Length: 241
View 1 (cartoon, rainbow, N blue to C red):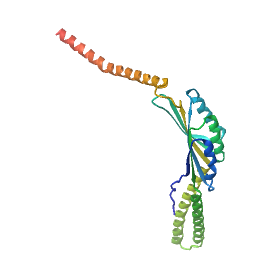
View 2 (cartoon, rainbow, N blue to C red):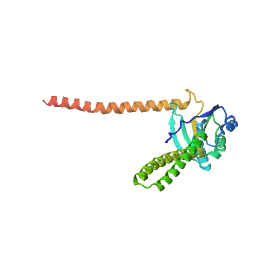
View 3 (tube, one colour):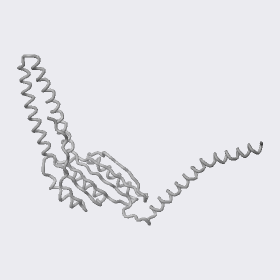
View 4 (cartoon, one colour):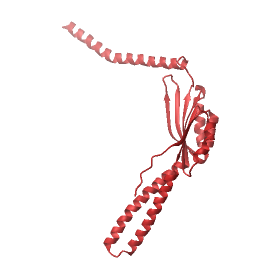
């Protein structure tokens, strides 16, 4: 009677050049009562505005009573930073939140996903009803049973039914929690359009070369100095003899 977690199906996925187009498609996502919404977006900002954009977006999450579940900061070969964060926002405020984020910095691109899990929840409800009806019937049989062996047999069946009920209730709770919050994964990228001829690129390359040279000198010194001392000591020893 147990049921494994169903594989999610992401329907209605559209790549949007601007969020206004994405928002106009939002009505097509609302097909059932249980919709899990996720969005993936990126925005390019100037180097001088990079840290400020991050602060504003994180403050916006707090203002919408959301939370940040994951962050990742990276630097590319040009020395330009990219900050990736996943934000969970109450589902009823998700569209307003997306528009507020774009007011801070226009999306370079955005991808919206909607997973309609209504049929899975309805299936769980149907299974739970059947199991609870079966449980009620077995409890009546147990109450009327005379022999100890009959009671133990019914008790064993009830134990398995209760386990199945707990599994299904856990799955329904997972769906309800997932539906109550929608998530946006946003990649904030520093220095849009910087070419290989930008000063950022050459500064980073120069620093890498300096680091490599210093590392080579230190490594060579660690090996060469003891060898030199050993050779000098050997020559001094031979000269005495």
